[in-house]
Amino acid sequence: MSNDEKKPGVEHRDPQYFGYYAMLQHQQNMLQDTVRTSTYRSAILLNGPGCFQDKIVMDVGAGSGILSYFAVQAGAAQVYAVEASGMAKKMKKLVEAPNTNQFLKGKVQVINAKIEDPDLRIPKVDTIVSEPIGVLLFHERMLESYIYARDHYLKPGGALFPSKGNIFLAPFTDATLWSETMAKARFWEQQSFYGINLTSLYKDARDEMFGMPVVGHFDHRNLITTPTLFDAYGVDFSTVTVSDLLDMTMPFKWSAAYTGLMHGVAGWFDLTFAPPPYGGSSNDPNLINTTIEMSTGPAADRTHWQQVRFLFKEPLAVNSTQTIRGWMRAIVNDMRSYTIFVEVVVGDEVPLSDPAKIDTEAFADSSDEETPLRRRGRWELHEQTYNYSYTPGLVPDHKPEYSCLYQPESVIDQATATANQHPPQQGEIIDFTAMNNVMENYDNFVN
Image (cartoon, rainbow, N blue to C red):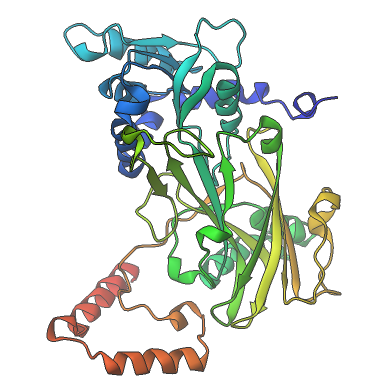
């Protein structure tokens, strides 16, 4: 049996999934993500001469059609906008509306179908554009459709926008988030709730609350270490196969920059929009300096994708400079998403499990008492909860200890010595009055 035959189907989720994206409200949410929309437009227009001018283009999962319209603005001869939801009718209405958007007339052909449907009247195309991205890059499993379109409709040497994704994982601390999550579970710890003992469900509540990925923006200063591009798990859209996307293992190894409690693993992604050739070089002057990148990381401008955090049921203590090792394994499920497994250990001596050999049913239930420097967890990526408590700029002069992260003395001494060598200029002196005003406003808001 092939991998495609074994993979969980998503057809039973299609009515709900496509019904969601048929609503203008949800399309508006994505369109108003200025980082997303402006990055796509910049990438398409900047690569217009080489990848769009007089080219045949396909837009996979076109939604409102915005990428198709950008492609026409970049000079596309014809765009096939493939959209499976009812949004296709609204897109067609916009394209065909009289006396408006004249530049789209005869340029955009709307196809109300899934790209996997047989016998679509679409020729081989020069360029494919798509926004097939979900939380942590792969939630919603639209990447499979993007790759299917590449394999069945893209001409050899054709262009893909986006061309690559990088997944970043990092250890984080957040005592408030952990305590809030635990507080929800502790409701079921009550021995007499209107005379009813709820404690038999207490463990189930903990498993459920901590098994929900937390989506939302967070302060990047809560990271115990910050990953670099060398730590990223790359997904090259020009070479990755549908089979590759069904079961992915992302190993990681970090060096803790602080002493503190690790409450879990955070994740986000970057996107790259680059012209072909992929995996090679070109002497075409039209393709020089036309690569665009976009980050959804906690230190970057906000996007509707936000970040995701996977909370441990029990925090893990780490000391600065200690090695943190582990892996994340993501396996597709039938909910248009993935089941996430994570194992983390502290130190070089603690053995790691082989992610390919884990018991996926009992993995998260195994006790860590015999291995106190190890944490395991299992999460269903589609069972997301949301946290919007972070407000950028609320504490402008943030110190690591505010997040219960503690630097080594040697680092503090070095920073002090460097600061003394370069005293602040008059305009750089901290305005404590302004800081106090911020905190007073915060106190008033809270109280």
